[in-house]
Image 1 (cartoon, rainbow, N blue to C red):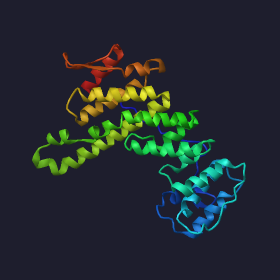
Image 2: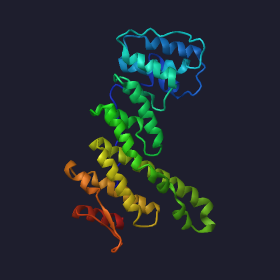
Image 3: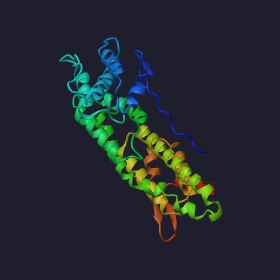
Image 4: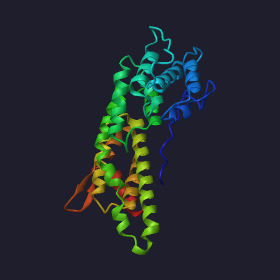
Length: 288
């Protein structure tokens, strides 16, 4: 049975309405031009009754909104001891609003947060399909992982990202469709494959949250790559990969990495593993 990827909820996240502001709308604006809204962000950022996390996000947002304005309409009032808020404002002013603003605001809490935040954004850009999503990144930080470890996980995802183009390629699937039905079924095949890859990315996130291990991420890349060598790349093969990875998550931590260590035996034309449990799962998925 396919196990749904976990949804990682975060305590203390900004709500849709904070201090009367629709933060999610403001965070999604690409060309902010509402000066009244910018003034509200400024006032809310200076509200000492808010948590530092909310204020850092607001200072980041304020810096991003005024970055192109000359002269700066209102200089923020940030004390010498408020390094987190100062870094957040400076990041927004220099780099604009990042793709994961809540995540970046959290990373900026670190003393060397500016360098770490820039590195995080860069690493996410390098793995657009299998990158760490904001919700997962926040869950990893809440689980005790530090920003440096998180960036190491992002870099480990570079081992999986080259597989994205292959996994998204539905051409072998499309070649099996009757020409008379291709105009109907081809878009469906492409959409199905995208959904499958999205689920794989969420599954990889579950492995990262469970293990917080760069080694496991690299082993996942090897497992997927080996499985892709076993059969034509159809939705059925991707489903078998997803099903096996779902079942492996039921094993305890001591076995999880070993489950992923498979090889393709060229002479026998099949995947082999030293673990009997893995072979049983793969056999079961072949019949599914």
